[in-house]
Length: 134
Length: 134
DNA sequence: AGTACAATGATACAATTATACAATGAGACA
DNA sequence: TGTCTCATTGTATAATTGTATCATTGTACT
Image (cartoon, rainbow over all chains, first blue to last red; front, side, top):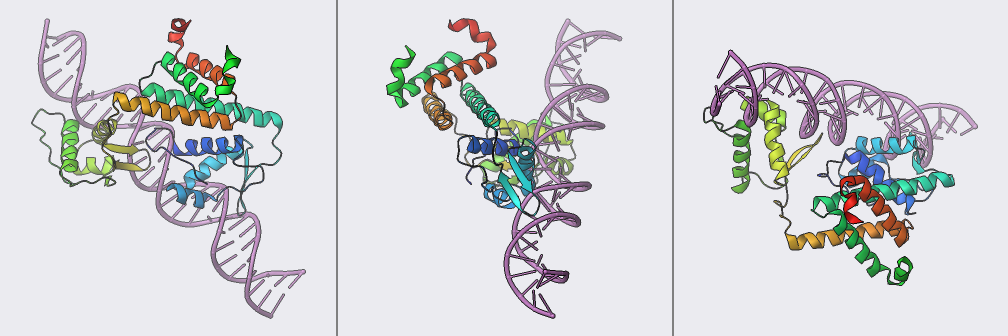
């Protein structure tokens, strides 16, 4: 598993791990039944302590997103209810958006500039959809 | 770490600590990646309060010279603060935007949904600017 | 004196790490 | 089959590290 952390962001590492995994589940990179890396394996890959990973896993477990079992490992929960996966998607979208806006705001963009940038790039990446938004 | 302070100079201690550390980085006694003493260890060595060291570290952190991480320690930054110029800023914003859009596309959002989400969050984060965009 | 402000200190807190522990499963072997 | 051993897995708790907040001290200015 390859997920990026920002040690300078001020956002606790365990929360960053929680968010990255939620994203991977929401967009399908991780599927129900998949086994997550062991707390030690992921910690080694990220160069952090395995208790920090364990803390992230515990939060995801308490949210019913994954299932951690002592001695066995950690797995993405099977059969997520549709409303759960929809809620997760919304949550991930909002978290991504919040982070993005905070980043560009820190670089000094004002709201209008942000909206204009987004609009340009959306048009560039989806030229066919352009007529749909008058 | 051995750095001298002058308690009678009238120059605040925390600023003296900032300057001594800057010097040690400039002349190579401290190298990128090196861990600095903990705030408590350095404070003990200098016989000052650890909050004073923490204040110095915070200033160096905000300058991008060091990276302080709660629970982990304090480290000399690899790349001494590439001050983002106006020209570069544009590039960074576009890269961030591209990435953000790729992320939300992968989650299945269509362009209109994206613009709507952004708009909502901008309003939430910048309520005061709202009347300005009619 | 009295006020204002900056520097420093004291205390409580949150994030991360270190260490020891308990549950599980795979293989050896009687 | 049973159970022993041991590596692997997650768990619990305390120690370490930086952070936040307020109190104290000292100095300059009225």
